[in-house]
Length: 386
Ligand SMILES: *Cc1c(COP(=O)(O)O)cnc(C)c1O
Image (cartoon, rainbow, N blue to C red; front, side, top):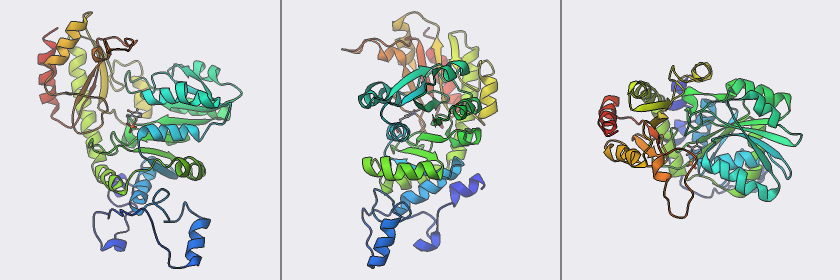
């Protein structure tokens, strides 16, 4: 199906609601039945019925159709956050005593799920360098059930070879899952490379307007159906119909927004790489990246996220660079219309916490939808402080 069809029409049966272009927000927790026969039918197939909004809601169902089609998946489930989507996908693939192989530099709450939460249930893990296929394969144990990827990762932007990882996992009979938030399905569709489960923080590009927290898990009918009756219904981390409508609205411009952040990201990183005060830029689509060929092989473009090391060995100078930036807001998260900066010097000297292992001259940027030249002007004047 054509991308334009998915974003503009798929799942929208307009005849059912007065031919309205914009789908209705079915703000109802509950759905009534005309008779016992329909009631019994719904209970025989709760996943395929509209019975209660924790399971199915018609507005959320429109969103699910679009998201599954975008990822070339058979089905998908939508969760109340990206963190819960990651947690549910992981929970769906482990049992007591299972082992997970996960790449280094994964999202912070995925890391916590593996290191602090799952050990309570006897689920262990090994972290591996995702750029090293031999290390990944060597970490697989007889009780390994899941290989968890995130490509590119969201701070240092390192990639894994998705096809090769899927092949290793298949050889050992284990499931692969990936956090695909960075690239969005516009630039990377891991199922095409043999990955089993694709996860998104839809808070980022899928919604794209910094006003909804949402997560997505896409996979085969079999895996999604199992998740529906297990993690999805028992843990109940759903989104509201209103938020589903906001994400449907966000998707209308997904392709357009991704094109914009790719073009701006290319322009801005190429300016920064040539700047004498910049040590190194981490950006998968930079021709200087050691993973440039891999990026071009498995991705159709880059997101607006990148990081860099400024040339300084002074924390004060790193702070001064940050203070000079006027057109980037200081914040976590990314994927909205607004450009952001996350300076790692800000994680130093937090009362009651150890300083991070990542250096203070590391700065992560997110390029939003603003004019790239306007952003470059700001970077140029801020770098003069160094
Ligand atoms: C933000 C983020 C998440 C978590 O998503 P939430 O919607 O904030 O819960 C997961 N993975 C990556 C890569 C992220 O950037």
